[in-house]
Every structure is written in structure tokens, then in C-alpha cells.
Image 1: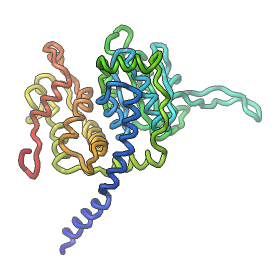
Image 2 (image 1 turned 90 degrees about the horizontal axis):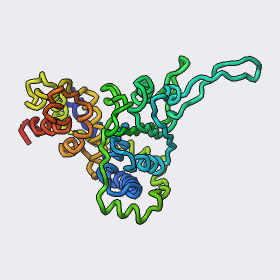
Image 3 (image 1 turned 60 degrees about the vertical axis):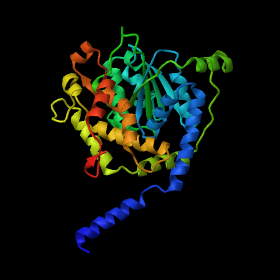
Image 4 (image 1 turned 90 degrees about the vertical axis):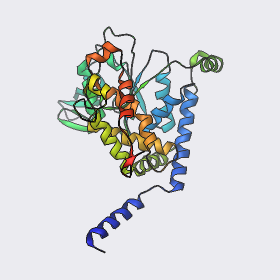
Length: 351
């Protein structure tokens, strides 16, 4: 056997050792199912939303929740933290909120040996799950205070960098109805959110169940569904979900075709998109698709996983031209055109 072929075989064997066994998949799926059941018990009639929030959690990504007040966004975040056994904090974003109110800052304190010194006091961002409520009400400077935390999972203050607890999630909310006194999130900040999810009104049966079973709308305290070791095993299992090359190729071609100047761009992309997807979007959907596949009990990512997650992963990352607003075309409609215009290839042929 030539050295080149031997290297390829050794590499293939090394990859195979990391693949999930049927028992691994079954165990991880059972743990994830217990988390999903807890989320569904906390929020009635929102099964698609709770599933996507759990997928984002397993993929270690942040989530932007958009919906009118009173839809249960806070209860969802509280339930997620308790089911995972993680600490959580809530910050109500307002126009007068300062960056230090989120990250913490220096306080002048008396020292035991005499004299005074600046001592850093951690802000609410030093937690596992941060609920950034109505994030678009804060000034751009305060919004930017979260950028380093979301991207690097750390905070720099007084010239010193401090790591945030692991895992660390930001679940932010914004109200799409009220626009006065709000500051739209810039593209760089939106790109840090794995998903942007719309929280819609529950159906009539769910509302009826809510008012019959929960006095004052208070959800029961969710107990811990998995322990720390199980959570670590879940994260490790997501990392071992196989990504087939044809699926990776399709994701790469989707990102390429999202740019209006690309030859492969569908007509709606050429007409309505001003700036397409970045490589970070490709990385994001791969990690999300791994979590989605594991939740479905599969050891590998399929085209269907990418297709199901593309609207929530891609739409908020596309920068649309003014013509999209004039024609009433949404980013999700452009993503649908993108998925329909870029073919899936398997073994060199169309799927």
C-alpha cells in the first residue's frame, strides 16, 4: 500500500472512531427528549419554537426571540435554565442602560491594608443563561457591550479579560410592534445570533389549557432534567455527529449563491439582496444541523436538517435591498428561493 493510500486509510479509521454508535445516539436522544418535554410543559402550543431553542442550546448558540409581549418568552428562558441546572439572570434593556450595567465595572473600595483601589464587580452577564429583554430598546453602545460576550464568551474591563461561565447563552427578545424609541440591531450583532425565531400566538386550545391549569399564568417550577455529566455528554455527542461531504458542499454553494454578484445566485437573490451570507453563517448552520440530527435520532446530518433550519439561520443574516421592502418580499422568502435554486448533489449528480 502506498504511503498516500495508507495515510487516507488511517485518516478514515480515525474519523470512524469518532462516529456515534446506535447506543450513543439513543442515549443522547433520550436526554434531549427529556429537555424538550420540559420546555413543552412550560410553554403550551409552541412545539416548533421549543425544538429550535433546544437545537440552539445543544449547538451552543445564542437566540433572538421576536414577538409581542405576553407570549411566554421569559417563562421559556427560565424553564430552559432550570431544566439544564444552570444559573440565569435577566436584564431589562432600556434607553438609559449603560454598558457597565450589563458587563459590570470598577468600584473604588477601601483596602484592608489602607488606601483605596478599583475593584471589578461582575455584572449580570456573568451567568450561564442571560435573558436580554427588549434588547433593541438600549442604545447601540450598550448593545455593543454584549458583542464581545456573545462572540468570545469573555468580558474585558480594566485591561483584564475575564472568562464567562460555560456554557453561556444569550436569549434576547425584541418587540416587533413598537418602533419608537428603539435601536435596530446592527448586522454585526445579528450575525452573532445562531437563530432569529418568531414567537407567534398559540392556538385556541393552548390558551384554554393555560387559563384552566395556571392561575395567574404562573408556570410550575421546572426541575432539573439532566445533570452536569449528561449535559457534557450531550455537547460531546453533537460534536461527533457526522457531516457528509455532499451536505457540506450544498451548504457552501448556498452561501456562495446568497451573494447577488454570484453566477449561481437565483433571480430573487440578484434582485433583492444587497449583502449575502458570511462563512460564519455556514459554520452556524452546520453546528445547528448536527444538533437537529441528534435530536431526530440520526448519527449524521442530512439535507433535510439543513433545509429545515435555513430560514431561522439565514434570514436575519441577509441584508436586503430597498426593492424588497417596496415589493413586500421578506428575507425568509428569499431564503426559500435560495433553497429552491441551488440543487443538492449526491455522488456528483442531482438529488
